[in-house]
Amino acid sequence: MAKKRIAAVVEEIARPIVEGEGLELVDVEYVKEGANWFLRVFVDRPEGGVDIDDCSRVSERLSDRLDEIDPIPGSYFLEVSSPGIERPLKNMPAFRRALGQTVVVTTYEPVQGRKSFQGLLTEVDDEGIAVADGDVVWTIPYRAVASARTVFVP
Image 1 (cartoon, one colour):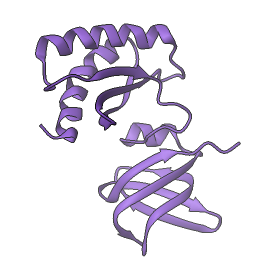
Image 2: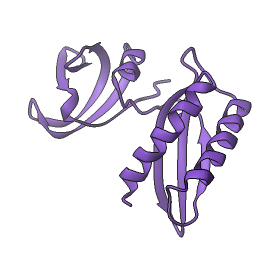
Image 3: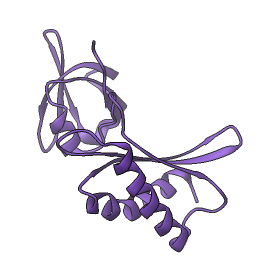
């Protein structure tokens, strides 16, 4: 099974577990590093911050469920953690929470002649987002977004 498909299957399994703990599922990654595979599940609390106990509860429940269903061939390490200060933006609610923050966005195809954008997230609607860099504002449709994340600006 392809890495993206495994991540999607795990996301379906993890979502009710994470939400049952009053948390939000931010992202799921299934990656190979060296000789080992890692399944990383990033969770957050909508009103801000998760702690080690939150991550531990989700990890235990998710590990039990993954053992039951066994959707991943071979062995892997399960990690459940906060997405950190520079968090991925995967859906409209995540973009809405990031309004007013600095973001980096890459696109599948050129938008207004570019594929990489960094600036202030100024608008989020049903069609896409607006990123401002000084006086220039780029309107980026969701369908064009390959990846997006917030950027820590000290």
